Length: 317
Image (cartoon, rainbow, N blue to C red; front, side, top):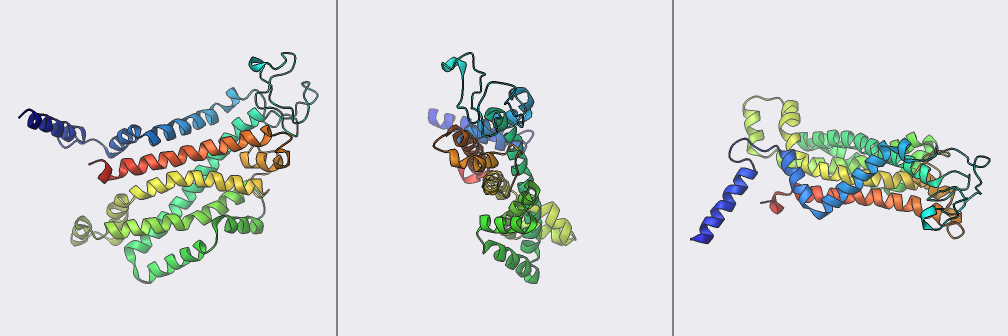
């Protein structure tokens, strides 16, 4: 009898928590609560939150202008190693916690300002690819027929090329630069969003509430954008979160090859590409930008894993 009462109390608590009694709990609140219970979600939120704060307060955190050449201003040499007074560095020397790069600039300041560019790259590429891919995928999945065939065959052609090689080819045609790199990464990312959206729309459009909307006389476009698409966005949200990580990584790859952000822009991939030959003589010039890329990509990937678990009803039933 005691166990039965306990089970009943637990069931009642679940009903109240999920909003089945009283005012319903908004989906985003439920998702955020579940996300913060997942270890991957917690770590991902912490890393991304830290990166966002660094980007916002870059002028306060960075001790120097990212493009300021310090020769003649301080007693520094090109590619000086890190100097931290707390760890025994001579107090007579100026403190540069991540050292000096090949152009006599403070590496830490460039790394801090680079977080702004990396976040901008990830958000912009995902936004462009997401809007385009969701629009194409939803039209293909909902209308079907020749529309579906034309759109998805175009997506298959793009998917037939390795994404990084296709991005390199696009930038080679348009010319190097961060804007062209953003465009190239967005183009190669569109098919992934289109395919996932199409599959999700195909699943949702066969539901009873969509059939009821048709019977009530709703137009095809209205049903698609007010009934079908909002209920098909769950896997797309997860994919978009992980897409930010992919965008940052691919942009760093293009910049490493000299096709993305151009010097003196403080972008992590550019910093790696400029100093790649100093890996053994001045490893700090490669280590710190590499760690920054790893942390940012890891944060978005962990957040995507946490969102996938939080939005999966089978794991939250």
